[in-house]
Length: 432
View (cartoon, one colour):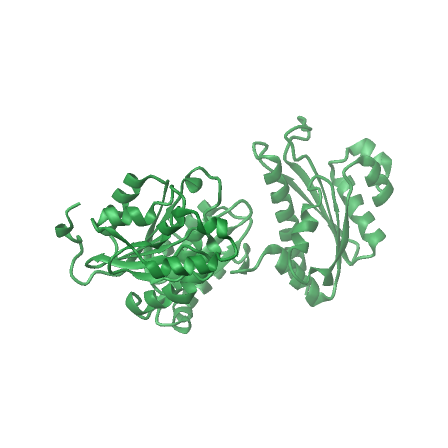
């Protein structure tokens, strides 16, 4: 690389950042890369534009070449990983090669490492530890308060700064909070922030949502972006402003419009879950609930108890997988199962009534279905699920679902739980 070419920036370009995660263990899928997500959120709070993330394995030549490429398209590169004492920790060496700058030993860093490891003499004798003390001239060292590998801040050429961090998430976060965050804020931030508000929807597909709000997806400030997972779709509205108050004012008219368009599907915002919404509604009504589960095997109970405060409304549940337990624990008449089968409207209804009476609760939900991959038939294929909800008035609502039989067992279970909670939510909201 000819450094004399410098950057390909125009005059006064917008500040932009990239994230580079280094480690073959990431490429191979041995560990989950949570660092990129965390750094992205931090950059957002600082109002820094961030358009690209890259993951690369432990190869010196490839890392070197990639760093050279990145230096020509952004102002700030944040790296994680590759700072330890092992032979495959190559980040600092690759940076040195990328800008043809030799490495020098920082003796005081070696003294600090020895102090940190004074109780582990066998580790100090590892000559590779000194590798963590080698840096190019002119770098600013980022102290690592919880580990042995320090990072660096370095501007090797005009308009380009590199910041390096270990791959261990706890070390990255402590180093970031101690020194890096303020550095970025002071040098790169224009004082603005990005603020996001997320609407959560269920019972509608991402493609349907996108078609209904095509013109809103082209907005620039705020921006609107849909994100889908198995059970829900998120609509994230993001504004850039001087502060959160100003950002909320920018977001408000778009948020109100989306609430009108998708009033039947929005169940919450930001950190809300269907379980937390249902719990809040039951708390407001001072009512309790119990579950009788078959095909979901306790997943519904697990989902609701994952929310703090669920004990105020959830009394308990029964996983009645066998027909014998349905009869003995839930008082399901044996002739119902013989005539209609365990997966039926009649048995689901009896399960809900049985658990409600036995555990003396205001509400009950039962689930019976065929989660697969075996057990289906022409009349009752894999993916067929019956949900029964019984309320204080002893009225039972039956929901029949036929999920795609190509879905795997876990997906059918998760979708069943989601529909249980959403159906109950809608019933609770309909009660004045």
